[in-house]
Image 1 (cartoon, rainbow, N blue to C red):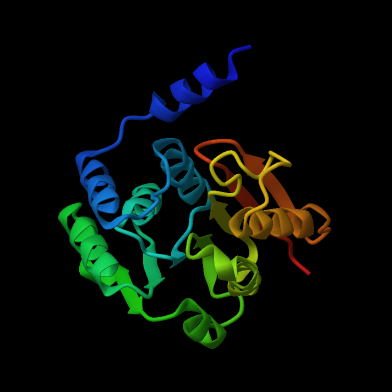
Image 2 (image 1 turned 90 degrees about the vertical axis):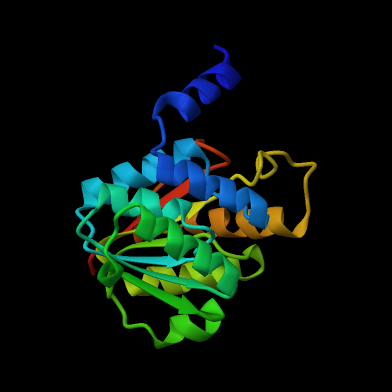
Length: 209
């Protein structure tokens, strides 16, 4: 089986709308590692299947993931946190140009580790963690607390450019993702899946009780 060919086919299988293509272009210009088209398609499906009404995004980027999530859950409100105001301005423009009402958007400028402790337990149906990897474990810990029972926590880039599965690779980012996957893989309190779309998408469902 040609895994590389299958991966490429899956990545290109779902065409992206113009607003997302433009947001992806802005991501590239700003030096942001946006989720891949295949991961964006999965985010759309997961948001739709979960019936999410409240979505939290840790790491706004230029709006690619936000567009995917709200395309899947068009009635949801999106709260998104980023320390870079330029990124949030670009994301806001992309989201509004896609026809998303301003009252469905809440953009918070600031350090996620300053904002997250003030957020209520179980307040969101879906939490996406896509911010700086130096605080990855802390972000996911907060995300699991903030997601409601039965809610989704999603972590893109979980295979980090194909390096996580390669034992030779040992840089700090790889170590962070390996530590996360090791901790989650041993958990009995979450339902877990790891997709190979893009450079990985870790999916967690929090269990009641």
